[in-house]
Image (cartoon, rainbow, N blue to C red; front, side, top):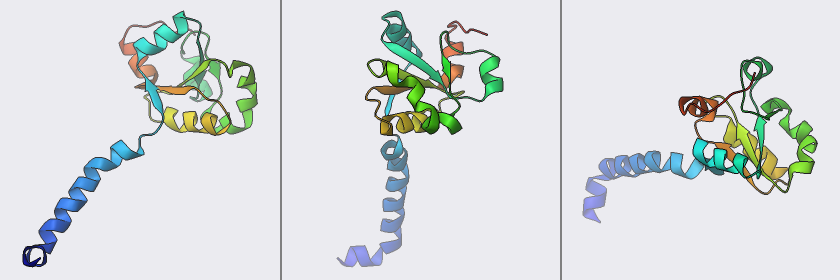
Length: 133
């Protein structure tokens, strides 16, 4: 007990550092899929792609057969995806930062199998996978 009282600041730093290291692991919720996993889902016909980027980015190139619903409109327009509830919904953004939030919106709307493309469209392109304009 004396050690704890004598070194309270050192212990506080250790606890805060540990918390800072664990925070990203605890806050990253939702499922993610690599470009390879998404390609396999597409090839098996088990996935629907939803691109949540803005219209300009979508027009510049997107995954084949992607449905465009910007993340700001996703909650209002999730009904457009009702017929795809039996499939895996793959949410795509530019670099993978907005997709988990969009996947969460779809999860709350009742979609059971929603994944975010890990690394976003940038990861897709880096793998040399096809885009459609």
